[in-house]
Image (cartoon, rainbow, N blue to C red; front, side, top):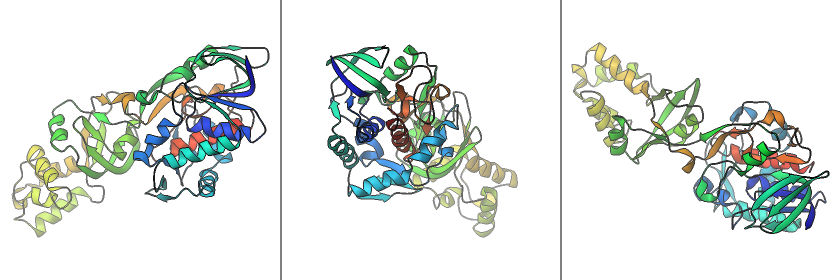
Length: 392
C-alpha cells in the first residue's frame, strides 16, 4: 500500500493548480486521473486557445444556490495572481474582448505551464488510474485503485462536472460526495446551444453559419453579444450565456437591433427613403441573406411608403422583441459547464473542506458554482484549487 499526504482525483485545471500549490507547501501530493492525458478540457477550450481567465472577474459572474460561497476563494486568488503566473512562464496572451484573456498561440501553453509547475514541485502524477472504492479511515482515506491501494490524510475531489463526456467527464465526483453524506443539487447543461424544432427550424437551417449582434434576455437576465444560427437551432456567445438561466418552456427574447429604437429607425427610413424596400434597408444591418429571409418570412417586404403605422409597429416589435421557446439544448455533449453539483452549504468557503467528512475537499466544477462564459470558470478552478491547497 502506498501512503502520501494528499491525493487529488482529477488532473484538470483545479486539480493541477491545487497539486503544485499544496506540494510547494511541503506536502507529498499524488494526482491521479482515469484519463490517459491530463488537462484535456484545457486543451480544447477557447477554440484551442484557452480563455484562461477574465480581467473583470467578480462574484456576480457566478451562478450558485449559495451565491456568497465563491467570494472568499476568488478574493484570495484573483485573476491577477493567475495572470502573473502566466507572465512568469512567458506565455504570450491577449485580451480578445470584454476582459477575456486568451493564449496567443495555443492552449497547450497553459497546460504546459501547469505540468511544469507540478514537475518542479515533485507532484506524483499518475494517469490511467481509476478509483474503484474509497473508504474513510480513522485518519484519512483509503482508495482502491487500478494502481493498487493508496492511502492519504487529505483527499481532494477535482473531477469536474458532466459536460463533454467525450473528454472523459463522469458523475464520479457526485457519487463520492453522496457517499460521504453530501447533498448534490440537480445538475443540467449550462453555456450550451439551443435546439429549435418548430417552424423556426427552417429559418435557422437556412441561416446556418450566420451571426448577428443581439441582446438576448430570459428570466430577468440579459446578455449582448453575437448569436449564431445553426442547423440545430441557435448558438453564439449571447445564446450560451442565457442558456444557463433558461429552463424548459421558458421564452427567450431577442433584440436584433440593440443599437436602435426599432420603431423610430423604421419611421425615419420611411420618411427619408420611402421607395426603398424593407429587405434592402435590413440588408444594411444584417447580412443580405438574413435580411431577405427575415423580410420574406416574417413580413411582406415592400417599399417603405406602403407600410401603415400599425404594420411598421409590428415590424419594429418583431425585430426588437423576437420571442421564441427553444425545444431544448444540445445537452452535456457540447455544454461548456455543468450547473448544479455538490451543495456548497456543506463545504467550507475558506478551505473547500467537507463539513460532513473531515479531510475531504471539493474544488472546481464538481461544486455548485458555475461561471459565465469568458474565462470565469477557469478562474473558479484556479481560485478554489488554490484555496484547498492552503489547508490539505
